Length: 117
Length: 116
Image (cartoon, rainbow over all chains, first blue to last red; front, side):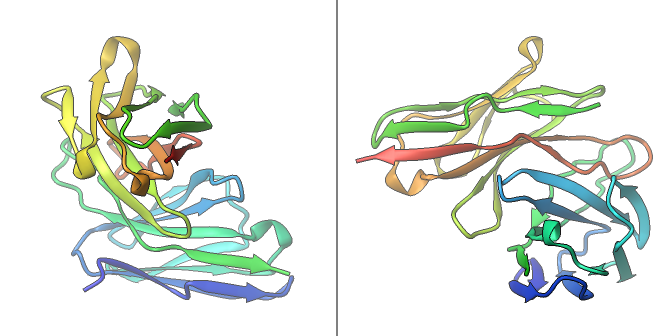
């Protein structure tokens, strides 16, 4: 009955590979996010999707591509992995209460630790 | 642009002592403010949140926070810490920009160490 789940929990791969991280939420939320936490534990928003539509795309290399097949899923695909991509990636979701009354309380997944060798 | 400052990178507190973690924010509209806690190797757990109303908000695990608009602060407090409170604490700000969901902007975190 996990609210926001991510797979895999750990991902170790070589430079230049392409990999995907999957995220699923069973909360019925309409907005999902990807965050990156670097080695200094700094958390930064990467993407936000609302009802399968991209809302936020921060300054992220276009090697990173989010894909939302439906409201409950937001997967992160990374092409040509680089050493600097090593980090913990968190998925989150939230529910818009009503226009102008958006709460933005976000529920986070357990994270995926990506290590690029 | 919105920002969050947590001026203390590390704080050491004796078990049973009181705790205050500082957070200052900058946000152009009405802020929604959050405190999250992250234990080693774990995800983020919401401690408490402020949207509107009473400026003193109660959270889980005995934590509370006070929103002070004049000081742009949202400091986290606990009257008596337990060894299990040792973790990384993040303050965050978000809101509704009219275009949809705002991602949260996080501070750099405060690492809390509990001394026996």
